Length: 279
Image (cartoon, rainbow, N blue to C red):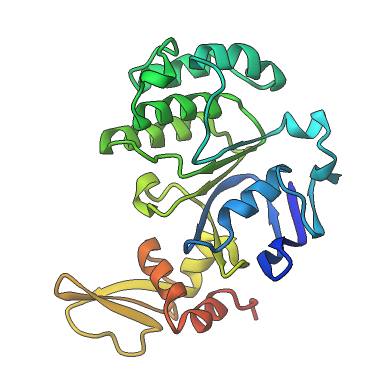
């Protein structure tokens, strides 16, 4: 369990990048959303100990991640959007870096690479952005760490490669592991997530399972404006809307629509509605 306890981080005196974030991050697949500059990448750095909070704490099963103990760092891995491999090939990265992760699975790495049409022997400098990203994701998902943090994992990948990535994630991430994915491309990994984390202006405004969201609101489509909608917008001649789920019938969650609602002028009211305490 990764526990974020009222953490705040500022890059300079008058700018708080992350403000008062509190959350329990347990096993599951988490989608981290937020507008540009919302603090998503900063939060990921704080979660893995690459940045230290100015106040509050981040603990992994009771151990402060700031202590950077090998026993903690070997259980968590962060793959940034701008990751640059210091080794010429993924195989050489695995040989030198993988030794620090007791759960690293070489067979899983080779299976992941094969799914992407790679061998691990390719010179990374000669690969395109998308091919390098495939190599990095094949490696990161083979580490088998308890907590894996990915920033824009599908960046540069084509449509078929994103399908392969979804399949590899489903195969590699077990029920007792935690995967947190930060992305602006919500459709890249489909509906595989079971938790939502939503940042807005440096604050974590939503941290809840998807089933609880769909238990409180329903996502509907109509040829006419929807009466009583919490939020709605026109889409290809129809209206997509979010309404209170008064019947208790869960609908498929529309993440792009939910995101638009959260960022709209009525966003704070919408967020307050879906995060209200159970009565």
